[in-house]
Amino acid sequence: MRIGPISNADCTPVCMSSGDNIMWVDELRYLEVYIVRSRFFKCSLDKAKRSFYRAANSVFGKIGRLASEEVTLQIMDSKCILMLLYGLEACPLSKSERSSLDFAIDRFSMKLFQTSYINIVRHCQSFLNFELPSVRWENVLQNLNR
Image (cartoon, rainbow, N blue to C red):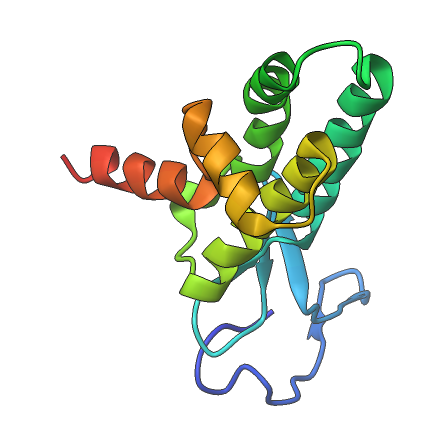
């Protein structure tokens, strides 16, 4: 895999001493962080979001409407969001990638609060002192820079 201005250039396979070739790939995984081929260092969020959705739907499927929204959001906060944010302090995230992380939470919150209005969802989240993943990511980066 290449990262840099010539990341799209075709490369010949690397030959090992046994005669086998090591093929070039477009994505690699290191400690559950997926790094993708790009002109600049970039991480993929697709698998992290998929893990989050799987965990959040599992939690919601088990407790459903039995627990209050506050309890469900707290369980999601303590169990599921970690899957979404794992290792991202090493990744430079663009504004659209941060919005993508927030959208994953907002979609689940729309289901939880039974509304399709983002303003209502954000109001409920702020009322319950819930931080969006983009805010958490920025806080982690600020703590690392201290």
